[in-house]
Length: 609
Image (cartoon, rainbow, N blue to C red; front, side):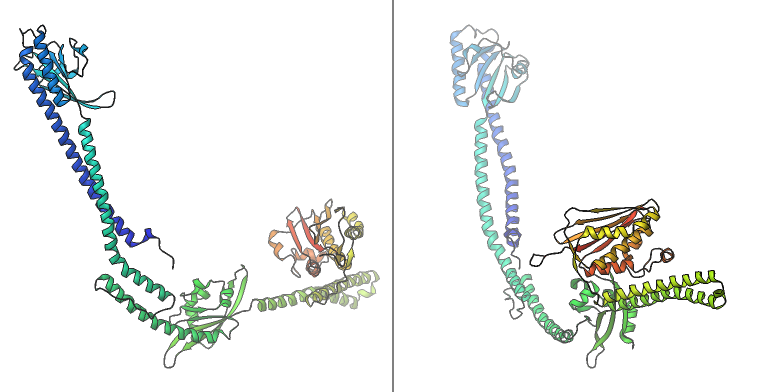
């Protein structure tokens, strides 16, 4: 059994769920708590600044009232500075006291003394001098420090005699808030750790029985049905364990029954060399041997559990009729694994238990493709031979009857009739000779007198034999032989017959002014390749697959008029095969035909082949 990753276990998922729940709850509480805490701190800070500013405003109001000599009285000036510095020591804020014209009359000690006597043009100060009671703003200075600014008017009613301007840093409050946030994060981490520990303990109580059931399932898969799951509780998991034990007992019974059926079928299959298919009482395939898979080209996994009528590709009604009738065999035509059509004879027999109806069906498959091919070839051969012999025999008979009826008295007519009779007789002799030649190859009785042969010499002799015929037909021929080509091992008479047949066909089906090329080259270390190519009428593509069949003609009438028997290419193929070579033909309509065959090289005795 495949080992499960820790990240895919239920225990891990439970731990993650609890961690996410705690993390979500702590984050939700933390956001609310920290937001409330921050608002409280900042509100208290702002309120404290406002109170200090209001106290200072009330205190400096008599010094800024009209008619007082605050600006000219040095002693009053010192008192104001002392009050501001004392307040600054308490709050740590930068403080400025401003008169009704916006001139700074006093400032805290951390501010440069040069600002005293200068105008303060801050917006908050301007708004305070205009009679607005409270003006606040949060700013960030050039050093990045967050600060709070407050400007309060000095004076009651409609008369404003000045303003108090305070600037205090807020960093201490934010630092306190950050410290509290850090403590909260530590608390969250501790809660997560405790959650993981508790989750492991809790999840283990759930996953341990499940692991026990999984272990038992693995042992059952390996064939051990003797062990039962220990039920420790009566909850849902305990009920699952009880159901699992019940399933185990039922499986033991089912497997015992299946073993009985397998033994019965095995005794049948062990004595069968043909394909065998067995079904249950519903017609579903339960057994299928390897030979049946090969014949039907159906994988074992796809056949199991399917109806036998689907596997065989026949109608269910016909199958039922065959199984119940007296004639329990039929012939199927199917496409084999290599794409060729095969014929299969299927014989059916039923399986019956004593005192019961049919409990199954056995189908025995026998591949009769080769038998059918042999029978078809025999019938076709007899028909072709009969046809080829009947035509010349009919001609001879009719001309002999004409001679007997008086044509013999006319010397010129008699000679012509006798010439036709001789031609037809020679044609029959060629046909019988070709058939005898093929028969010897079929029965492996053809004698091959192999010897080392010079390819160039043999091809030159063949071309010379056809030179007169080529000249009459106005067809040119070219011979191209690779230099230093080795000798071949062949029967020169047989190969001459092949070359004569190929060149003769090239001449027959080439027009005047055409060309034939004969080439030879060494293909590899074992074979020489020879080709005969023409520029004739060509062969349609649909005929190329059968062009080497016996008695096969593309144009039967034209081939017969030219004296062909339809056996030339068949004989050529058998001769080349007997030499251990190959032959194939390529052609295109109105462009020509090329036939290429190979012959083995000649190796001296003791040389490696």
